[in-house]
Each structure stands twice: as C-alpha cells, then as structure tokens.
Length: 376
Image 1 (cartoon, one colour):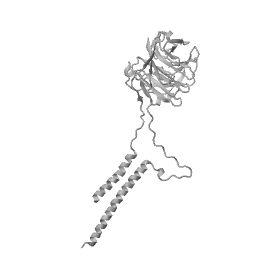
Image 2 (cartoon, rainbow, N blue to C red; image 1 turned 135 degrees about the vertical axis):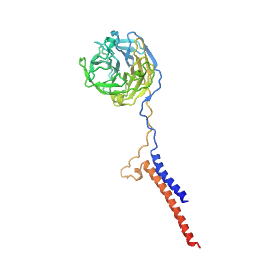
Image 3 (cartoon, rainbow, N blue to C red; image 1 turned 135 degrees about the horizontal axis):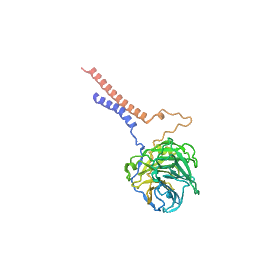
Image 4 (cartoon, rainbow, N blue to C red; image 1 turned 180 degrees about the horizontal axis):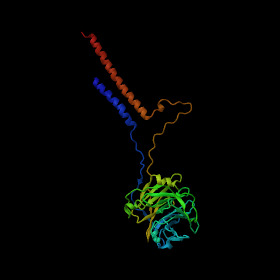
C-alpha cells in the first residue's frame, strides 16, 4: 500500500512540476516575418505599343487617359523623348528634351502631377561611349501643362559612376534612386535639387535593396532575378514596388517613408514570369494593379498583374484585464498570470495527494497499535 501511494504521490509531484510549464509555455502560431511569394501567373495583356517612335521602353506611368513612357539609350536620338499614349497604346504626343538626355531609365509622377524622368542609366555604349563614364546623372521634371523639361544634375558621393534604372518618390517628394546592381544601393539627394545646374548636387547613400533568388523564369536566369530595373509608388503613397527582370517586390509604406520601406520592410513578391526584358513598372490609377513593359526594339506589350495580397493579420491575443476603478483595490488573484495559477493548482493538487497518503499511513499505524495492545 505504501509503495502504491508513494508512486501516486511521486507521479502527482512530477505532473505538477513538469506539466504545468508545458501548458503555460505551449507554442503559439506566430506570424511569418518572411516575404510572401505569389504564383508565377503570366500578366494580362492590356495593349501593345507598336509605334516606330516608341522603342526600348524603360519607364512607365499609368494615367486616367492612358500611359506615359520614356525611351532609354536609343541609337536614334530623335526617339529619346517623353511619349504620351492613349489607353490603346497609340501615341498621341511627345515632348523633347532641350538638351541631350543620355540614358533615361525610369519615370515617376508626383502628387501635383509633375513627371520626373530618371536619366540615371549608364549604358553609354549606345551613343558611342564605352559604358560607366558619366560624371553626373540627372532628373528631368515636367510640370503639368509644361512643354519643356527642366534638368537637375546629381553626382554620387564618391564621384564614381553607377548604372541605375529605378526611381521612386518619397512621401515628401524627395527622389529615391536604386542602382541596378544585384544589391541595389539606395540614394537620395543630400540637399535641395538645383535646376539647370552643371555641377551635380551630391547624392547620399541611405541603404540598400536586396532582391532574392526567386527562380522566376526570365530570359536572363539568375542574373535577371537580381538586377533592379524599375520602381513606383502607389497613388495613395501607402505602398511602393521595386522590380527586377523577374519579380515585383511590394512594400507597405508608413508615414511616406519609402526609403525605410524598401530598405528594411518585408516584401510581398509578385512574379513577373517570362517578360522579354522587363524594365518598367507602375501602379494603375486606382492602385489595385501593376502594369509593366519590356525594353524591346520593335513592340512592347503592357501587361497587368494583381499584386500578392498581404497575409492575414495574426489572431488577437486575449485582452488584458481592465484596471480596477477608483476606490477599488486589486485582489491577490487579479495579479496572477496563467503560469502562476497553473503552478498553484499543480502545487495544491500535489500537496493534497501527499496529505491523503500521510493520512492513510497514520490510520494504518493507529490500527496496528491497537491490535498490538489487545493481542494475547
């Protein structure tokens, strides 16, 4: 009997000591901090740009009336213009640069409707150079109703040239440049922009954008998944996207801080599979879709994609107990956590079993004593 009771007591103590923490620290499903990756679904064709003047599209903006695009380092310099298209991708008008635009690579639109052209590429082989020879890069601004863009020259902090193809606008209107390298360097002007300047306003590096090896099919394989070719900010300023030749990385933007979003945020990755040379990306005016275009010498089809939806928020944890009102004191139990209560219950249970065992032993010994007293 003692051995059996001792076994029960030991089991009760073990259960009280080991099972209680297991209950208190049971793992819970935490939200993932990794990127969300959507299925590799081909884009839906919207329209095809077939005008011979609109070739090698590298930048794109979607408007209520259609699209605005820029051609990049085209051998035919007369084609390096800002092109306005209707919803069927037909050319309606174009705007020339007042001086040579060397390598326009991206396009953005500010809240006031000003178009910003990022003349930041360094593919100077198209104009007789050997590449990577620019001492300055430039942004061109075209205000609403204006007919002549204004140039704003910039220079990298170490004075060395870089090839870049992505431009985004911060919430306060500050331009954000992302270089093309597999780990895209992120730069902003280190001071106000200057108009028609010859010496560039210095740029300041503020972080980096790191694409992932997604495996999304594209003509350039692993290289295409790493090089940065475009960027955009949603019309409401709450999301930003940076694209490679294979994928679109969308980030949530807090308080207009696009830089923080693309350098330290968690992206949602929308594959852009098998685009011939995917470079341009923009949001539709309603912000619900991406539109993209490829840098092609003859025709380029604008494609529409639905961005990967944000993951569902984690289920809310138990609401904390309300604080006692005026004049009310907190009881002892009010201050106990679930772990405390579990330990107390386990302890009381083990102590109760132990007391029962002690009582049984006491009864057995009392009976044995009485038998000894009356024995002949």
